[in-house]
Image (spheres, rainbow, N blue to C red):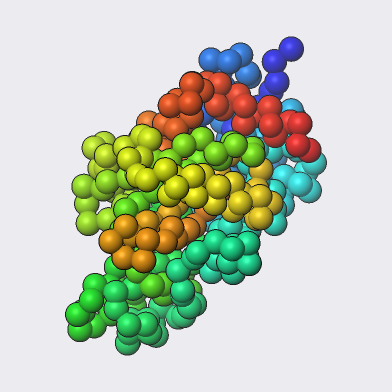
Length: 305
């Protein structure tokens, strides 16, 4: 008998459009494996009633960003006693807070960039850290709202104080780490491989992640073997230390011309599942097709809770 799955997609966050694409891809993959899938958008105020009426065997969480991967939806599902995919309440909330994530991972011996939390208005008024540095929301994903302040910049980014700024008042000011962009997906306790991302924009921003042709993915990354192995090990360490479940993806910078260190930037507890997304691409490289990947995520959820 096939499992009845409620697939959550869309939602209210700035990453809604990405979630709609991820969710549609996951629904198609699950149906290809014989699951009965009903898509539910929590932007609908009746979504909890719809979920209760459906009585699913599990929830496949394809939401991104706030009210998707920050522990709040997970808390609702815990209260409803419905098994769900990906990480639980604590790991989701912790990983969504970039500064707290770094504090935990430094204790595990990983290199993470120095940073501080500030009001966006203070960050727009004066440099709170010597340039170059990065100003970004502390609790968003998909590189939304990320601003790089280059060396020699006279003023911090004025858009931080704009009335149209949609990402909240709390900003992470973080030391800019130059170098090559690397990422590693983890399935359960297994690191898949290392991808080097070469963006065609100024950096690996929202457009580079999701626009067709926005970046080039070198898979596996052409980097020294010791750096490759360190990235794989660090991704598993981050997954384990934060208490993550299912599929995650950790992002790194490696500065081969500088100190040579591998720096962990953040961990994504619900990686994108769009046609240009990195985790499904790594799984395919390892011989795991997309329908098999989403089926594994679903079965992992049903056995975890």
